[in-house]
Amino acid sequence: MYDFFSLSGIDFRALALKSGPYEYENPSAIFTNEGIFEGLYNIFVRKMESNNQVNVDPINGYSQTVLLKMAGLARQKYFRSEHGDKVIIVNTDGKLYLRRDAYTTTIGDLNGTSIEYMY
Image 1: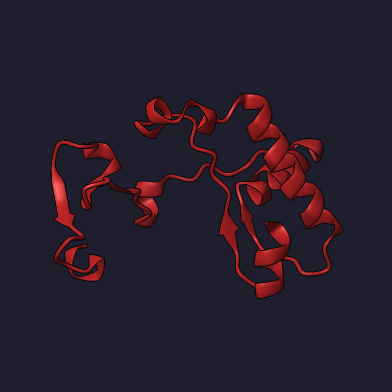
Image 2 (image 1 turned 120 degrees about the vertical axis):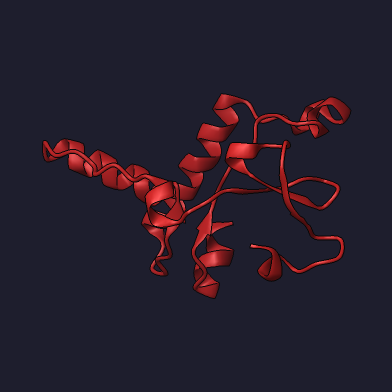
């Protein structure tokens, strides 16, 4: 996975989703803690071995935190709300929700309107 994105010069985020409605229909799709660790570890190793460096979230943040800790320093706290960084949840029916309003107040619907016009 890392090789694909690094050769394309594309930064990416690797998120392992552990639960959700799909897991009830397909229990083999559930990631274990060990599986998540193994996947992130493999991405980290490929990143360290690669000549084509791209940013990989959360690997870059984890690496910075470790190096700061080793230097006796602390990572500066990041508050999403202060930087306009919001999580938008897209439900399977195309409705959009902000994380704080998870599934209570929709901010739009992708079935008829592009996201750029909603948010």
